[in-house]
Amino acid sequence: MSESLEKKLHELELRVKKLENALTSDSIATKPKTKKMSAKEFMLTKDLKTVVQEVLALCYFLEQNEGMESFNTNDIMSVFRLAKVKLPANINDTVNKNIAKGYIMEAADKKDTKKAWTLTASGETFVESELSK
Image 1: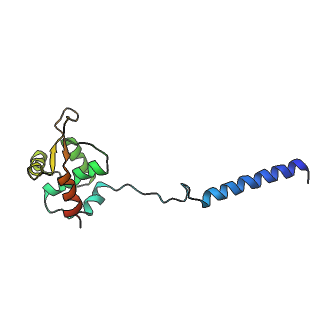
Image 2: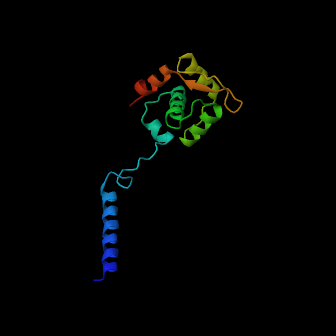
Image 3: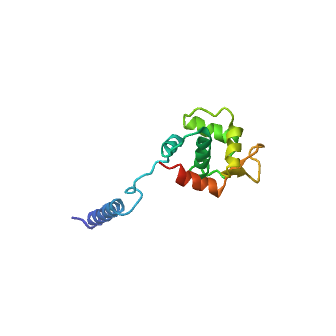
């Protein structure tokens, strides 16, 4: 075999070995992909008995799964539609009932010129422990 052909073969073997190592090591190709949980899937993990609890759970979903720091009525309506759940007749009333229970509080800043809210620590704990199936 000529020297240049041997050199090319050797380089090719090194490239193949490098690819094999990448595929068998702890690389992106071998890590399982995790699918983001949908609003509906999240609701199915909770024991929700009232529309007030549904609003609280979906607000929790917005903060924890969607990364929202605060939410307004538009956000709540949107997540209800994503979850394919009937919208509450009066979203503000259900939010106010959660405020009265200490689970939601008004956010420091408005969001899109609308009043915004955020969960309290009590609200987070209630969703995580009391509403779990």
